[in-house]
Length: 178
Image 1 (tube, rainbow, N blue to C red):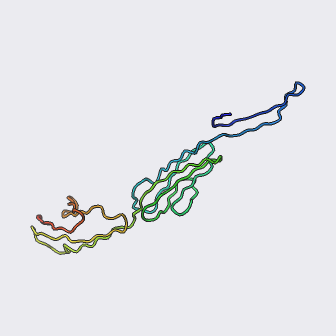
Image 2: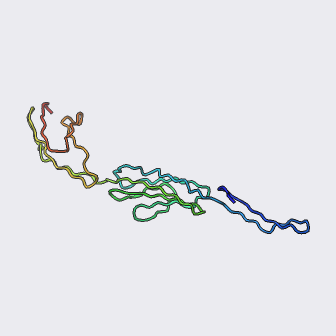
Image 3: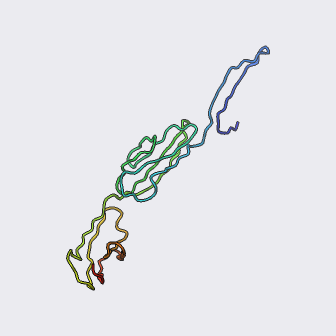
């Protein structure tokens, strides 16, 4: 017998002396379809905070439970929740199962970099310089997170930013007063 997913009823009867009487009734559910499962949040990106919204969507006619693995343990999920993830790379694995044993999972990797970088400015020093003066721009920068992707400076209160190639020390000319 081939059957599709759904609820099925089987009945058996006995015919004696022109009387039909049921002797067996079986109801069963045939379901081989896993729950639908989607990770809505977090996204596959870098976060500047450890506290990140976990939002999972799951649906199934016989949905039983939803949970996620945070990198160290399984956490029961019932509604969107903020969770503190570790610094660095994180993989969230979401699971959903139905009451008939069908399981689905989905995973997503994201990065947490919530530690601010450190800048040590050596030159120029905090003093007055003349106009049309070549000034060294010497600095060091460190980041324990994902690293430094770009550097720039401004001599006019941020109206114009000048990119520093490879975040290396350089010189600049102050050709305006201020």
